[in-house]
Length: 81
Image (cartoon, rainbow, N blue to C red; front, side):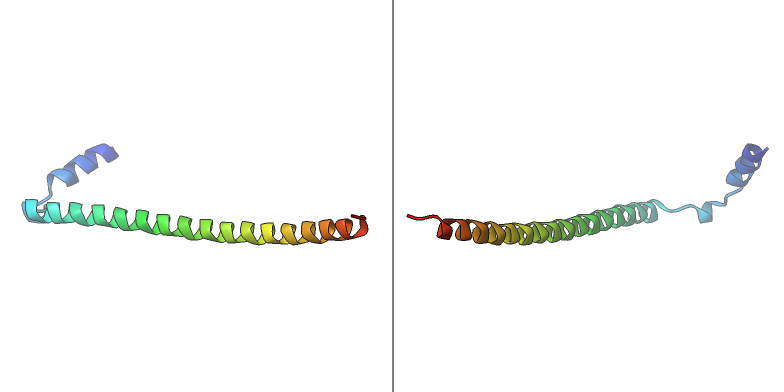
């Protein structure tokens, strides 16, 4: 039933409502550009996320180096030469 109604409505479309070839091309370009912009936004968000994670890792590495340095430093100070 719904398919029949859809076919009737689709068949009744006036030519003035359809896009001209120029409008259709412009519409396609707009859709492509919109997709490109969304992809660029996604890439930018991923880049920022990775930069944040790298900064966290670098901070953790620095903390561990300091901890190991103080442990190694105190151990080497206690040992005679």
